[in-house]
Length: 349
Image (cartoon, rainbow, N blue to C red; front, side, top):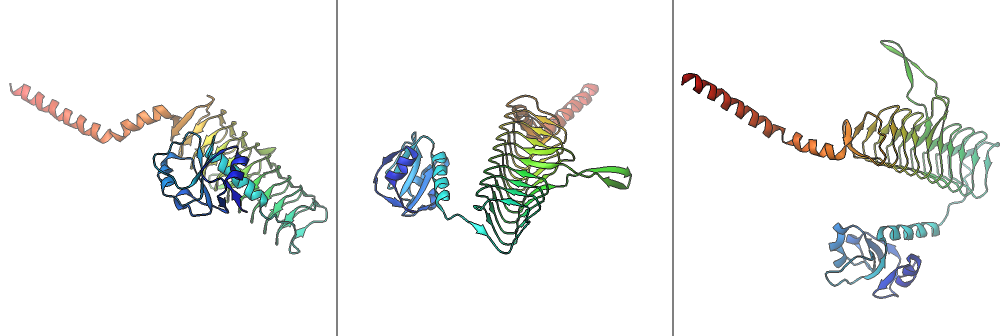
């Protein structure tokens, strides 16, 4: 798809600086830009590349001030990152859409499925499942009995949506992710054995949720594990049974949340964070990467770090002390030696 700087600026409500008729048919990173490509500058760390890039068009913030001559045509917008994302979304919508049902699939006769749906080879859809409009079910996807998949949702190869689980509209679930596997529930029988507790609940994923590859969301013991509207998860995330994630919360890779914990709205959870079971996390809480959360956080908007995690400012002050412990220890030993020497000297006197 070819676009001119003028047409791009009109779509983004931006302003062109340079050749309005220059044409692009590709996108690139700013440091790897080539003629005929479109790129953007949002992070100041990459500012140096705008003077050397060969990209034909660069989207920049209104506030950007050039320090040297720039050979590329600029399009100034309020937010370059969001503008570029909007262009990519437009491009994606204009790419060829997959349609049709491959003959090498199993779709039970009881399934309610719209004719606009794409189902790839070796996919399986069980009894009484309901599949919405414009859904894409890629190869080797499993959709269990009584499961539901909402309109415009994409299930990439290898996704498994187990029995009775619900996936809402406009969701994207990436390859290898499991929705509705058994929760980790075992009752001790004695010191050497455990009895499995049946997990008879389900998973409910609301609208506009995106889940990265190879993640796992466990079905509830009873009731539902719930992922609310607008949640975004990275790859390799583990959500245990009966957890509830609030609207528009985002979490990076390798986050693990233990059973029955409730996460608020608009939270941001860094990579490799661990959260123990039966906690409450307030709205808008930010948790730094590799933190371990062992107690509830009731303060809205709190920012925490560490393991065990606590207020980030206090953590950073403590970290300074921790890093200086070897020096402090050396000074204490030296002071102790001087005191002993003084005591000996005093006795001799």
